[in-house]
Image (cartoon, rainbow, N blue to C red; front, top):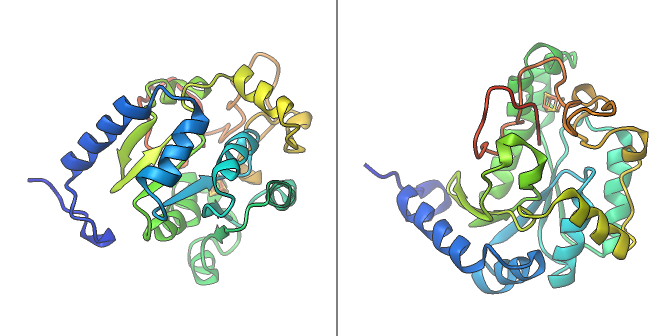
Length: 253
Ligand code: SF4
């Protein structure tokens, strides 16, 4: 029995949304990221799509591409209240640099923090629960008005993302991953060509950056995301569904 996504006011069944994503993937999935973003923002989901970013190590490329199409695109940042201060400063610098005009900082309420993590120990004790109330819940609330979201995930990042499609159906939305096919070298070349500011922690050995309690530097030869939830088997924060999830994979947001 197909479920209706009545919470968003859409009457598309899960099956219909999956079929829609597959059709969009066939039509647009092989195009350049700039064309995918233009189609998404202007033709497919005008006024109905938000870009979700962590203002992490790779975020500048997607934000630059999106700003070139529409600097007023809604940009959602989940401020867990546990980010590095460098990430918050980088967010402000990048927003000013790119001229983005609709930044939506969302996160857990004070009451939620008091109820779930009053002494800031939950990340060490139960990171799934911590991500649940600090990231997953606030992002779901922020995405309620939208029919689609844009993420910066790439296939090369992890085994859990190797099967990533450009257009997916997830959580009642179409999820668009314009950079899915780009390799690390493509991202670096784009950032150099456009002189994009880098997250300051990248130079300090953090190739993947999440919350401060759950992110550590990565040694030479380690997976780029080996520093995320280093002492746990956790591989994703919960806001993305793994495309495939081998037990040995160790990657993250
Ligand atoms: S990444 Fe760590 S601190 Fe951030 S929400 Fe998840 S468990 Fe909590």
